[in-house]
Image 1: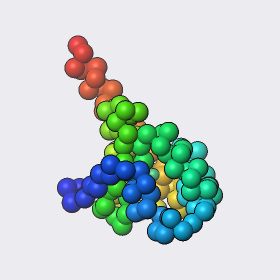
Image 2: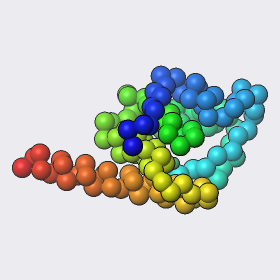
Image 3: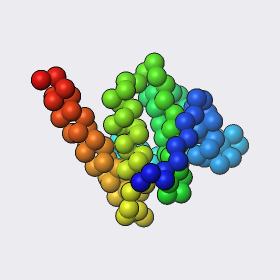
Image 4: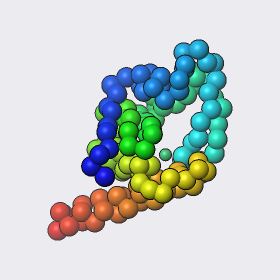
Length: 127
Ligand SMILES: [Zn+2]
């Protein structure tokens, strides 16, 4: 697990350009919404606005390359740990599913483990 490489972006547009090749040429792009478990087609400007509002986003390239962007004004340490970093690390764990929905479910389960670990740790530390 230690061989994962993390790329932290300061600029959301740089992250998007890294994910969607030729982004600047396209008016619409398609992707997969992990939260609602559905595919989407979206106008590039709208996606940018949505993610900017969301305050974080990430993706995994290949098997062991995790790319992350966070707006620290918008997201807490806990949000970033559980819903971004843990989710994306979940995508680096085998098996890798071909169906996007299955792959997202795996990453979401990984979030749930870390969320539980976080809650238990919080409880222990407050006693
Ligand atoms: Zn995901």
